[in-house]
Amino acid sequence: MTAIIMDGKALAQKLEAELALRVKAIKEKSSGRSPILATILVGDDPASATYVRMKGNACNRVGMESQRIVLPQNTTTDELLSEIDKLNANPAVQGILLQHPVPSQIDERRCFDRINLEKDVDGVTVLGFGKMAMGEPAYGSATPAGIMRLLAHYKIAVAGKHAVVVGRSPILGKPIALMLLNSHATVTICHSKTQGLKEIISIADIVVGAVGKPEFIKGAWIKEGAVVVDAGYHPGGVGDIELSAVINKCSAYTPVPGGVGPMTIATLIAQTVEAAEKSSFSQDHSHRPSLDPSLHSG
Image 1 (cartoon, helix red, strand yellow):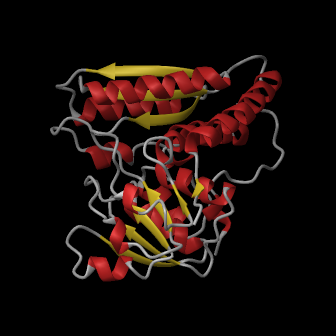
Image 2 (cartoon, rainbow, N blue to C red):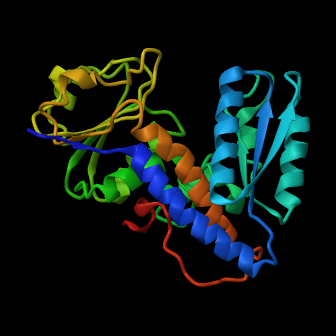
């Protein structure tokens, strides 16, 4: 069986080219002003700093501006909330990203939920999650929304299929399960402590690895012809699924690296552009469909 390779890197580049044209149109209707994605980095974690830099570079590639706010490691919850309030009140800022994780003394959930819904382009608020789950307009968490865009682009059938999601994090496992459900899949949510995991995965039409453990899901567990989505990335260039043992028998898969990862940042930027188009920042009020295919599924 020759599997479809769901190339997230190629799709992200295609999406960025489209977004550059949309940003150009926004600038033309707003006296040359660029939409701004504000990123907040608390502390000195090198991996987080790298992710923030990558997001800033993506903004530059499509013609947007990025506003980077760096706060010290000893920042308090109230100090971080104050910074978020300033960004909420700034009409030039179209999207707000609080880089995860934050130092342990900060109430991360309280800070996430302080972000205004219309600027929650990373899909991290409880309100945004609830609206997404109920099929109401909201920006989905960037990684799950990117997965849905990949599946749609490669014309992977979701409706009526049995999807097994292995992982239950609030920004990946849970939202992708709800997005798949909203797209008419039958969804089973599992995790590292699920009993009989091998047997559950063996009957899945779509397997989503989002458990955060390298090659935790074995290729032998996955049935012939299944669609394999690996949202993990670990040292050595491996994901959550033993891809080497499944490539020759699955119908489609996301490579690691180059599959889900590039779509996370591309979707974040896309949702920021959409926020700019919807706001008073842009004078173009023409309708555009949501970038998250799951939001219009009942």
